[in-house]
Length: 510
Image 1: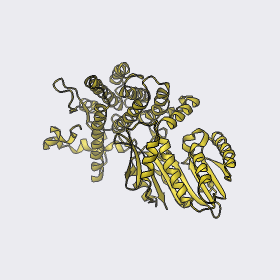
Image 2: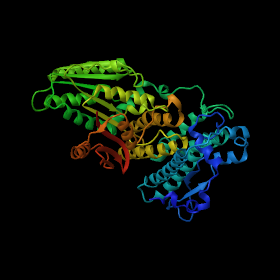
Image 3: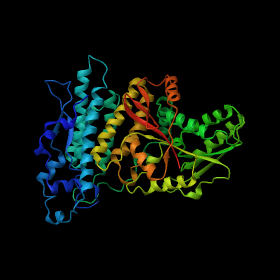
Image 4: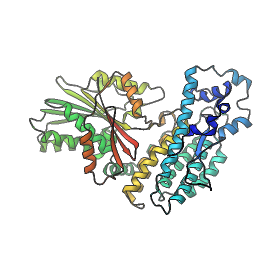
């Protein structure tokens, strides 16, 4: 394991921990949308691994002067008396929050470096692979810093070198690096000149740039090859069946219909389980899909109704055409005597915005509906931090683990692997790295943060007591590599790759 960054001599020296009031205030001002701070989103120092000829195996972290700091010391942007006079005096909690974000950034860099060191299994090529990987980390961090500081000249130079080394069909880290190169290129193209207010031009999310059929095929491949979505479906259906036990009229509200995955796999499995369950099946099963893909959802619904009739299940399917943030309470029709459950598979993070009003509104609606259980499955990582560089490094660490798992499951030149990487995960990476404001919808958060959000909204955790069944389910999926693990965390189940959390499933009641 790499040595902790807090063990570095810079942090052991008390003199190096001192910071002037002005410098701290300016770094913390990343949380305040004032136009006089347009250059750097954070003045936090960036830590990244450096190579050493003496001992290339050890992971050492060296503090380097960031581009933002250099810019700050050599320019008069922050020297304006008028600007400084307009800086509001910050509260103590603002300073603590700033230092916390700096800590998370440095921690993310250290973890990303450790992940790269562990990604090579061939002893003959491990040292060379580590050297190449560390060089890529250096280039990516330096480029991200240049982009954050709007240094187009330096960022362009670094991107040119990155394109020559981040190969789409290379090692697992080269492949994930290629996705981040694309994302940094997109972000750089949207950066406005120095002196202008804001960071981005009037551009919307790039999700529509990829042909829908390619994205649908990539989603299908992710479902078939990766355990992420299937894990969510398994936990959700098991919880829903438990909630429906002995009930005659049951209703499922599905937010997003599992990203619009064709054929309605989750609900086919649920219908089969209800039909094969001991005792009488429910007299009526209703499924309400919430989303904007009305035609696609209706096709899935028609297929599900036809399939359910063959199994003797009375299914009624309906669609609510609405995004999560625009959902209204009267959009969901709950009939008398129905037992209601709400299902959200990789959806609610899209309602997390800067104002947090959209998510709070959705949670209030769900709480008012008073479902017997709300099943929440989300990516267990933090891609919603206020600092771009910290968000960048956390995403690099998270997706490095996912690409490492793909490397263990599929050959290097398998077209399925390239489609999954380039048309599914690369699109998520682009949204996290290159988009801001309403266009950034991939706002993943850790399980602990979801616990706090749900608790504030009036929900209580319902422990998921199926650890044995979950491990048995994972063991039966022979196509999934043995590197995947399932652990229980405070009543929730977390699917991970080699100790790195990937997806967390939790259940909630009102």
